[in-house]
Amino acid sequence: MFRFIRRLISLIIILAVVVMGINVYVVATTASHIEKDIDISIGSLDFGAVALNSAKKINPQCIMVLGAAVNPDGTPSPMLKERLDMGIQLYAAGVAPKILLSGDNGQVEYDELSAMKTYVLDQGVAEEDVFMDHAGFCTYDSVYRAQYIFGVERMVVVTQKYHLFRALYGCNKMGIEAMGVACNVEKYQGDKYREFREVLARAKDFVKWIIKPEPKFLGHKIPIEGDGQLTNEGM
Figure 1: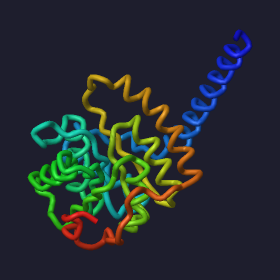
Figure 2: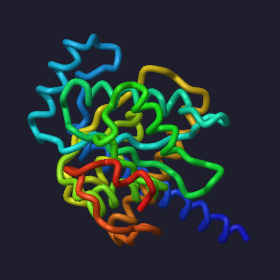
Figure 3: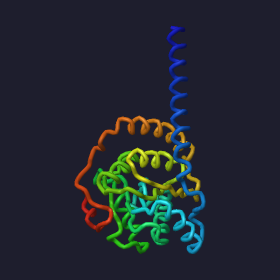
């Protein structure tokens, strides 16, 4: 029994070292692609100048906003609203001509996409510029489908900073040239748990990008340069 416990402890230590090593690698290889000078609190003129200057590096086709939880009444949660606000500001500044909303719309009773689209339209984004990825069930699927379904080759990714490293790593593996913009204005209850969970998620996606399985749903191709209204009814 003692030998078994010792081996189990050794295995746990090895796994922990591997997971941490993967995390260090993912963060180190993507950190330089996260824009450090853009802050959602910057005034519109300064914000636009900084954002446009950074975006010139890749000439992005779209701004991808990754989904998050919605409130019981169907409105964006504070965390999701923060992501959407940043995406809207980037769009308004002329950073990219399209917004790609990617989230979970896999159940009738739970619909991140409708909440996201309603919010951005209410803020003045043109409907034809809003693309909806109804099967962005996870970060891996969102990035895979951005390239496979929408033909994205260059984009800006918007989410909280701890989440950006994994998203940008996936972009690299899908051949997408991407820069990340972090929205970290507020601190939320459960942030420490989410950051811990992200450590495990990075290791999981690292393995998935080696194997590169197809997402559960794919669908027909809808070029990001076209009319976003074609995505209103799902894919």
